[in-house]
Image (tube, rainbow, N blue to C red; front, side):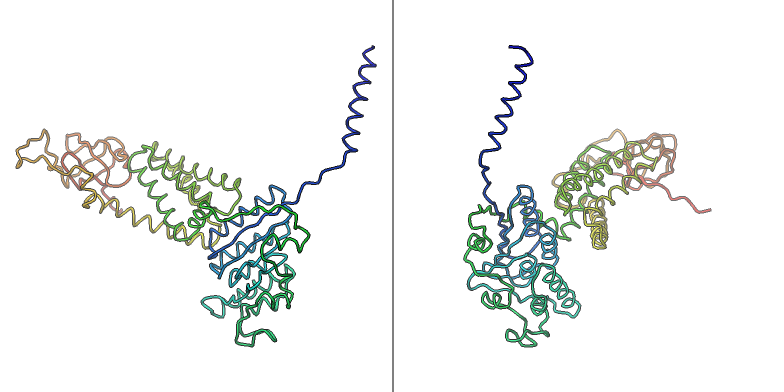
Length: 436
């Protein structure tokens, strides 16, 4: 058999195989639906759950998303985040009101394209607390816009927030609107009644779909805690404190590692995608690198400036880049200054520190003799021979004395004054220059 004939036979064989495969009946993959279970108070952890559930649904190609709701309300900001996520997804969304969708829960239900309610369930009662005119106006507009966008009756949504509206036959003016499952169906808010998410799917020809449930995990809870503005202030203060420790210990690495761990927790709890979070985290780590360079080569300044800019820039971005981010950064910075003072001034003299620090002195009164009495240098002036960062050498008169800085590093050839002597430890600070 010639080589040409063999090639043609191989080609013909593959052609027959491909045609046979094309002629086989295609097997349609069963529909899959992601069910996100929201239960209890609406907070940051619930927002993290919804984000995770929607991302999984989109990645795995689920046919639809069911949001099972059983809540009496919670934080408005977390509810608005959930609303934005549900509105922006390309997947069909179905709200299943298991028991109650009150207040923030009502907004989440209205954020879904379809609403189905269980027998005996209710929806509404969304008057904000405190019920100031400003809060009512803001929340009413959110409810109305959400309902209109998702195909629900905006007047019903407004009456759930503002009791001055009322709704004919369902709530008199002065009464907040809350609907039972039957009333919601009468007004077209609910498309039907079902006992479970699986039963609700039958109303949309998805009764045979496999349902994958997503419930709040411990990771979601941690993310929710880290999204609290006060917790974030504390984390930022601890990051700045860790950098301060790194400077005071002349760069031994403990402070930098601690700052990286805290920064990683903060950035991964943010609302950006993983890729964006890693980019910002990279900028944060870069800021610590520049701070480390400034510690190792003090006096240049450029590394310190770049480090500070990258540090606060990356923190500002991960906090959302809003005016609230400025407040959180400011609060964290002020808190860190308080911690600086406490650690630098109070902690070494506290009873707690005494348990870990050697404070017993070998004095002459106790029968000890020292090779060198440093107390004579107290309040004397000298000049630095080496850079103090924080330890180095100074000259007092004609004597070379080992000393440490009371604050950050001190340049060479700077006039200093001894402010404290503890045994052989001589603490100095720069002498302020007189104005011309």
